[in-house]
Length: 420
View 1 (cartoon, helix red, strand yellow):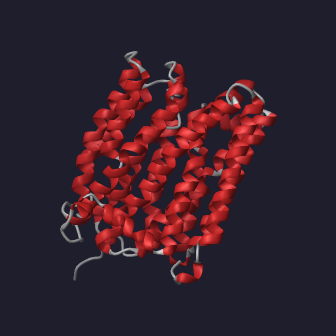
View 2 (cartoon, rainbow, N blue to C red):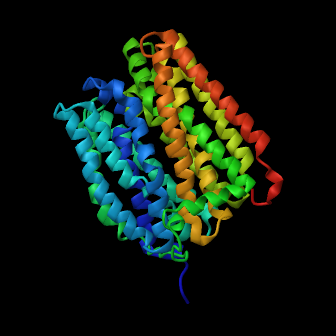
């Protein structure tokens, strides 16, 4: 009798790869504002944040279409991981070499062009190779959270919060990860061969917009991603400024700053609460309903930015810590819920493309729009220069989330399907 996919020891590698795939961005992404500021390149952060999503718009759909129709997903993931590590290393090397910051933007763009489908491919592998995705996928995804948490704490413990070495270290981890990807459970293509250029490029995934529930979630994820782009762009800067004020007394604050000694490590508070949220998702399993969890996620996101605004107003780092801690449930209840929802609403032959389409709308279009608009808003409000500027900046972004919440509540039809 053939064993179920989850009984195979090879599936251990799914958790290992989730851990390691999260380490590189966990090493450099929370530290990026302070790294760029060290190399007099902070002005480039909106473009550096936006370039990846821009170039990934079509590469995600194209590569995941290959995984759905022609190539084993685990092989494609390994090839892309190895290739992208080179450009990730170069992007931080040009900073340390003293080159123009535009070279950093270019190298990160090349990295994103190759690496954009990595999370979508790994999500597909995990969902295909488990007999109870609603219960087991969050348990796999927890390892990604642990990887990001480990990386963020490591950066601050190694005092790399403002060093390009954090990004180079991430490139080394990704290089090793590339070989491990080939040890993942075999995930062959299930879809038919592409019969047109549209199918080959993965553009047929846009037909999913015909389903109202999917369409509303897709649009909401795109809108919600725009204000959320500011979290990793500017929250570490505010943490650093508040840390310099030194207004955090008490035993709890002292222990926390000892365990998490820098802004990069303190940003990992979101990953700690994410672990709890993932366990809740696993416990809910098939009982999880999309609408209440997504609404709850956006309420958490709104509260987080309100706390950031208050932290800027009162100059209290403890309010920032509370806000950062809300990142975990915000991300989990919105994104992980959405990934599982999309997976159960599409056919096997389009699951990879569906995940890529979700990533395109939220991670590419939404994140690009958010990076550029948040950059303009940051300059217009003089956030980073005055405490009032920080308060206005985060308050405006909180209002944007109110709009996203209103659109989803009105537009999503929970009665359309009992699985929603």
